[in-house]
Length: 236
Image 1 (cartoon, helix red, strand yellow):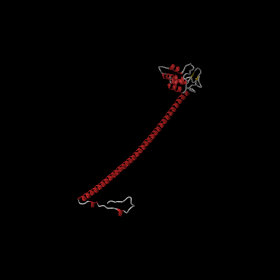
Image 2 (cartoon, rainbow, N blue to C red):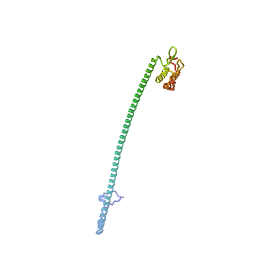
Image 3 (cartoon, one colour):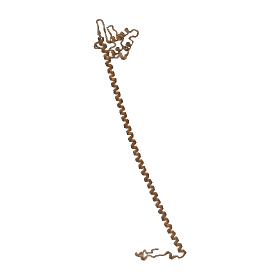
Image 4 (cartoon, rainbow, N blue to C red):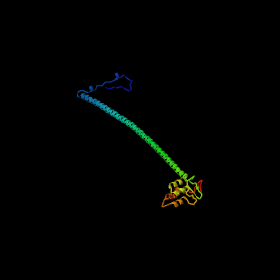
């Protein structure tokens, strides 16, 4: 079927101006049958091509949908993994902070215990020293009173002689009292009425090493040196 129209003429009605050509009428017999078969074959090929193209297009769309679905699934999985990792990181962070806080608490408690123990030890040592000092003072005071002295450097005089507490303890061979008197401030350089120091008195009184400890105490710089040159209110 063909439409013929003159482009130079004014528009016409297609219903009345169309010339219809019947191809079957142009051929007859085997030729017409051949043409018809070719036409059918062409139509079948066209339909097959359309089907093929449609199937290819559908396959492409299906592949695209599958790829999109895989991408979406991958992204969802990555998002889930990222969330899981973030939660795990947060859990580990809190765990570390808790451990650090617990460690700080333990260290603070340990420091507190150490400080308390040190304070208790210092207090105990202070009390011990105070007790020792009191015992020394009591022992010295008892010795002074027993022998009629008023102080560790006081001189006791009689009609023909004078002496000091340190000389008395040295003569008696009492090394502990000699040490206590020295620590209490007794002057080891004082001389009695005979012109003798406590060490010289001990040396004269020594019998077979009986006054060795006294002489050792009086000869020790740590004991004697701090008191050398000290003068008592009641000195010679």
